[in-house]
Length: 203
Image (cartoon, rainbow, N blue to C red; front, side, top):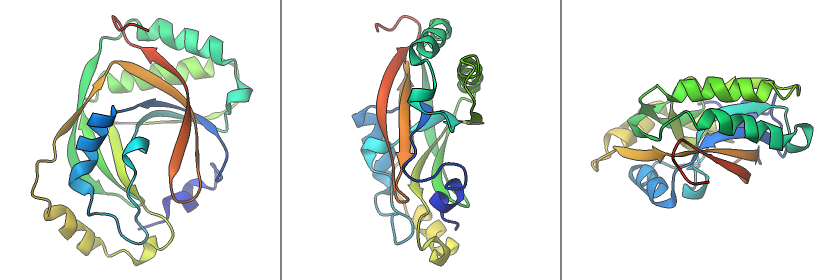
């Protein structure tokens, strides 16, 4: 595997706080998502702590909180969000990527419609950034870090195959989360900015 943090550090250096739009699981949902993969972590592949599990919608690369009128951005996003009914994402397809182990989710719609709308809303702020939108729903349960080159793919696949408990878990999507997010080369963390409720959900 390849060190995720070294790769993203070329455009998102450690410590820099970029704006991200996320779908975030509740603590109970995060526990269910993480539970089957507790034994997966190993040197070079630390697991994602439950409190930092996330399903990214958009990474606004190079755009910090101080670079944008967040009130205007949130108002724009809220206008769109009022047209989207809450829905459920189901996750249960673990896969080993080049830089992470992730669980894929479905349905793809309205997920990608939300991604497109938030990308456009962020662009309408007039601020300069590079959009890194998600193409499909997924949650990473472990990111490759220092020592990733020593991980044996066959052993990792065997560890996934040894999981005997049910893998399916769901996330109820009733709001969108804007955060300022950074990494330290081992873990990703963030500070919440705002939650934008979907149609019919109290603010």
